[in-house]
Image (cartoon, rainbow, N blue to C red; front, side, top):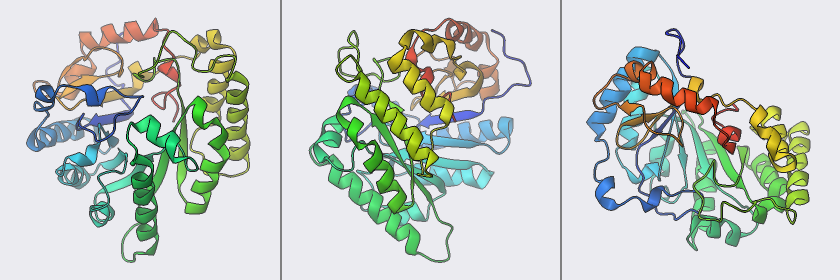
Length: 324
């Protein structure tokens, strides 16, 4: 698949570190050897990449993720540099590094701040998914304290705060309570369905069905509840096409291949070492320490990955990469 020269990416995700305080079951980044993590891009290298991207894209929007992005103290300078260029900067965090940085976050260049939280009622559910016993309380404190400070400060533009919740067999009964929590707090939520290991690098048996016969009915009911809550005006950010696709994956998984994966045409992702991907699950198309972003986007390597995407059978087509 050859990319037209006037076609540019529309979704940008920059991973500034794989270092993390959590040991999540849905991520293998924290397992990266420390010797490899020492090769992370420097702040000056990130700035050069941001400069090159802005020269190509003009004003655009991107998200910084990790690992845990706030482990790097220079994240604030990185975000401010991009904002000074005219770009919009968002971030995803586990909240564990924020208790002493809340004022800094509120005064930062970030527009949207998304917290990863998988439960609001049962701390054990979130803690188990994050691989540490204190994750729930520390993340919840960061969310509520930041949100309170955000609402009660004057003279500054409010930050937009969201939750990102991975929907698992253990938290299917919490769909409504999570939405109600967000409505009370005045924040949004985006649900992401855990699948059989294509969308996430999970430490689970990927040969078994995450939503087998024991949980299939409950999972379908949970998705119906998401749709109902969205109809009722709860702050659910998922669009209806994505929620309906969730049902297809659980109810008739063979039909999920009928949903076209658009990452090859839309996505531009950078890892902590400068490698650029158009699909998180496939090989890099080059490194931005040595190449301009537009050269990689229109390269033969990128076209080869796009061909693989056209024939790909993985279920990660249900991620927010495809549904905005």
